[in-house]
Image (cartoon, rainbow, N blue to C red; front, side, top):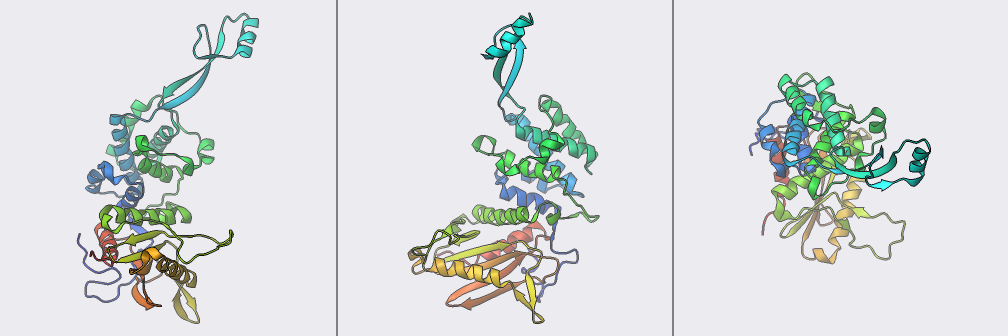
Length: 372
């Protein structure tokens, strides 16, 4: 991976400055990469083909991901599940509804009311796929080749119904369940959500504001999952996880909140606790001076002190880091200090860079935990 400058600094080592477009924007491909890492879809291999393409609009990027995903699902077979049907039939099929059948007989219909289950591709996730693809075809700013490809794929989904506006309005995306059999749907459902929530905003130069794609909670969760997934994939020796911190807590009352970390990297001799932050501002003002959020600083300090008191960390160095997504109004930050015998770091991750530079910044974080 190549990078012309260290994070937060220009090539000659001088402090950097905010990106003119505003560091809350990200390159279009990075939206896909973040989704792919967060939803563990990089293992499927479709990203290799997409990484070689250029996209001018957010819709075109999402259409490319959906087209790849739909083609892939068509080859391996779309998800199927049982759907219940009720029908008046001359021959018995499934279960007979006695009361309804008697009413039919009273009207001399000669039919029986039957209820039966049938395996079908008309599942919720397939319906979302078809609805999102059709919306991109009809209303998306996508290339004609991508539009044609989506249309041809949708021809094989004739038995899948579209989602109505009312169904989409009451849909709870977090209730979608994934397992080994439908793991390839994870990334596709994330893309469908971006399309169907109608919160896309593309700019003339091909950049898209990620904050306009997701609400603040979703954005923070995506950022956290992306960073954690990156370390798990590219630095497995660090044992990346997100455990609860329990050291130093004794006889805690039931109302005491738990300490749940975002990311913990465990190296050979050091442990690094990372708290990811994806807000509109990093530095606040107090008495005409820019300061870091006291709440954020106290939070990471508490995590480190509790973890350091855990007997399992005996003889190991425990460090803490606040890893902010670069904002439009704050300069890049790369600072380290020692407090009560522990090292603390504050860094920013500029998502408006080429992905190789984003990866280099994360690799630089991993380098804080050298091998034995």
